[in-house]
Every structure is written in C-alpha cells, then in structure tokens.
Amino acid sequence: QVQLVESGGGLVKPGGSLRLSCAASGFTFSDYYMSWVRQAPGKGLDWVSYISSSSDYTNYADSVKGRFTISRDNAKDSLYLQMNSLRAEDTAVYYCARAGIRQAFDIWGQGSMVTVSS
Amino acid sequence: EIVLTQSPATLSLSPGERATLSCRASQSVTTYLAWYQQKAGQAPRLLIYAASNRATGIPARFSGSGSGTDFTLTISSLEPEDFAVYYCQQRSNWPLMYTFGQGTKLEIK
Image 1 (cartoon, chains in turn green, brown):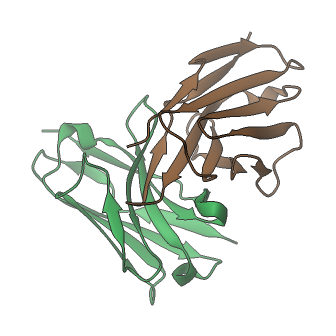
Image 2 (cartoon, each protein chain N blue to C red):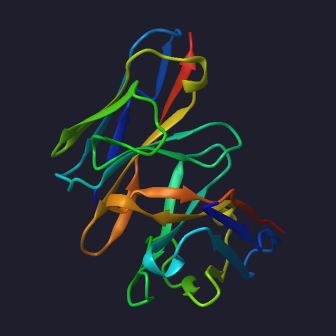
C-alpha cells in the first residue's frame, strides 16, 4: 500500500545534528514533490521544506534556512532532512508528506519525534 | 508570505449539528487551498484539495468552498468521529512554499 515511514528521530543537545529519513513505498516516488512538516508539542502544523521530484528545486521556511538541508534519492525511494545547529525550538514531531493532486499533501508518514535538550 | 487565519479557534457543537470553519488569507491565494483533519496522536489526513474537491474516501458530509481570500470547510451533520483539529493550507507559486493556518479545534458540546 502507499506508505511513508520516517526514522532517525531522537534526543540531541542544542547545537547538535540529526538526519531524518523517510522511506516511500507503493507509489512512483520519483514522480512527486515531497515536503517535511513539523509539529511542536501542543502546537499546529509548520511547513519546513520541499524538494522537487528530480531535486532541481528546494525551499525552506525562514526558521530553518541555512541550518536544514532536504535531499532525496529516487533510486532508494527515500527522502532526507539533515538538521544542523539544532535549537530547543526545533523540538517537534517531523512528518514527511507527499505533494499529490493539486499539490495537497495527500500521503503523510507517522512522524518522527526530535527533541533538542541539554 | 501569505498568512492564513482560521476562525474560530475552538468550535463547540453536538453530533448532528452543522459545522462551519473559516480560513482567511492575507492576500489572494491560488486554487491550491487544502483542508486537513488531525486527531490526537495521528498524522493529518487530507480532506479537501483545490478548495472544493473531496479527497479519496472522504465522506460527502465534508465540503469546501471559497476563492480569493475567503474559504470555508463545512461538515453538514457532525458524526462523533469528526471531533478533531482542522487545518487549512495554501501553496504559493514563487518561491514555492506552503503555509498552514493555526487550526480550529472542533469539540463536543
């Protein structure tokens, strides 16, 4: 079935780094734009970054620009988010999401928790 | 950057009642306006795309309308499983970026 599965979350100290992965299955991964969306505890949804289907284009929310890098490997049906210089305010559940029909996020992963704390 | 403002923040209704949720944009958006439902501990679920189109498997009691800066999600007759948080979301064309509203919590009265 169509599925996204995130991994790589955990506890990291402020200033540290973490790499999230998102494994796609059940669809042609290389056909779709992909995004990362996060949700801080008790808060709303916050778009983080997107990458085009062939990695030609990316963009980031201002809050993570210069610290986070999105990438993908279409041969491995995988999406990544490299997070550097992490701050306490980056603590959140991170979701990968597929931009499907009319660019709406039609498929979501289950989420991966990232906690930034000393 | 386009800002989406949802109202009300909390809506208290009973099963069987009609729910009307609003999403207002700070400037005119394209038709890339979507609505999501999120239940506690779960990932969001796409309900409506392109302002008025139901996603696959979404019951007919959910409908979306609007254009320009004002959009509405209507649930015609609330079922117990509809009590959740709802988010609107838009996509800007250039630079490509996405924005979510702050959410409306639909709670049982």
